[in-house]
Length: 224
Image (cartoon, rainbow, N blue to C red; front, side, top):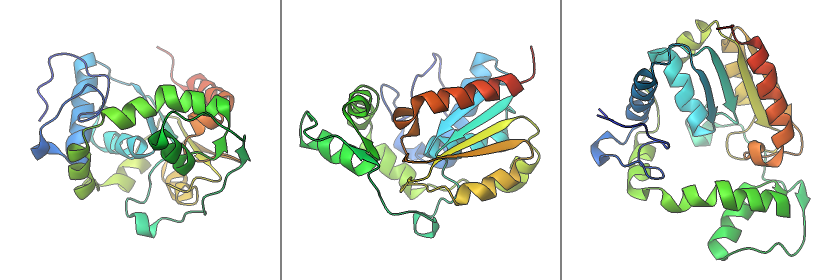
């Protein structure tokens, strides 16, 4: 589907990675990730996915290569947004007079972030806003129309024997945390952590805690 000759640093249709509109689907994105890992020669990669990326990471378990370890941050578990068990949006911390660079940044930050401080805004500006601005919106709209994987996800997850870490924010109003309990039950070696006072962007809002949990997962990875 994606005849890559060089490594891409973003998903197709995101950042500098381009993609054809006729392959805008969840299944095609998983196929692209699979091709990427095969290109690397990575037989047992550590796979880290955030939000919808964590949903695609679950798809990799079904298609291979089998990960050596799996980290799912604020994972999409229920693809039907209307069926998700979501808490209301809550601001856990807010610093007054944040210096936004335009209305688009302010609206996105206030709509997505639970810990609204200057340090989180600085990280959001550096790590999130460039992706928002560079994304191919036509391609993403096509993916949203084909948002659900056709793979047998749950049965494949039950067969995954590697270590897994599922990390959610208690105040995540995008993907929630309750549905992750079902995901935890499907992965035989999973650990589930729910971070309080934290929303969907937990790598920005609670970076030290996320790094610590990643380090614990690495200790559980097989040697070699």
